[in-house]
Image 1 (cartoon, helix red, strand yellow):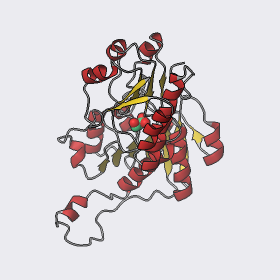
Image 2 (image 1 turned 120 degrees about the vertical axis):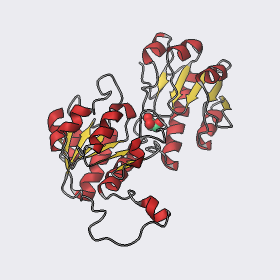
Image 3 (image 1 turned 90 degrees about the vertical axis):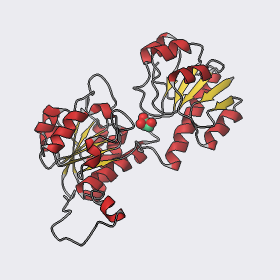
Image 4 (image 1 turned 60 degrees about the vertical axis):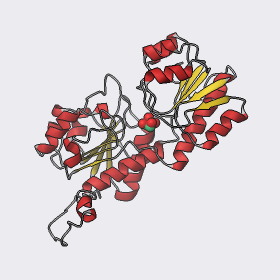
Length: 320
Ligand code: DGY
């Protein structure tokens, strides 16, 4: 059987594919493929290892209905039309768990960077424009003992809560569809309603998947109910935040700052006002980008394809 690997992945994962008898066709130039090109590449293969967030929509799936399995090298699967995949009997898998620590690290990094204004004048240092030490300049906020509100307390949220508790003894509150008893036990997290999450948090970190319920949940109305000293961190999906409303809230001083590893769209336009705001830190979607984590993600995806090749259920299937 043949598999198309849509972007470069670590050799360890290619080795798994080969060891179990899969003929791997890799996008060796690591070029961005349009949907038409991806469809084209998939015509001659049985399986797809999909890297990135290209739309695997109804049109794509119907054009590739011969596929015996799609393994995503991501935990998020909002870019896949699962209903159509299921109707076409194409199993789809993701990579839960292995990226939780790395992604929580980036949320932590952003939380600290924004609270301490770490990068707000980095360009001045680079450009030789930083003149002198100023006693009353660059004053940040300390995280010690502050309240961290987690929107979507699953695996990644829990990792962040553990780090925040251990490093700064932060008080953890969270909002979820259902209670996370493990988190309540491990980090003394307190379940609150959405209103309380907004009004009580010093930092709100988003760790939800993107769905009809979560899309644009952080909008004008939400920002108005947050503390003026609050920081918003998003390492989940850009569309959970209404970006225009966020820009306005920051311009009006309705919240203190924001740390964003994701945006809508990606990449963020270079003319986006968020990029010029000293109280905003923007990263290029690097949540899971460590050698260790990306290797584990790719190997997990490869193993799911081996299962599909052998007509076994994929271990991390998302459309049962
Ligand atoms: C994920 O795993 O969903 C991250 O966004 C990286 O793709």
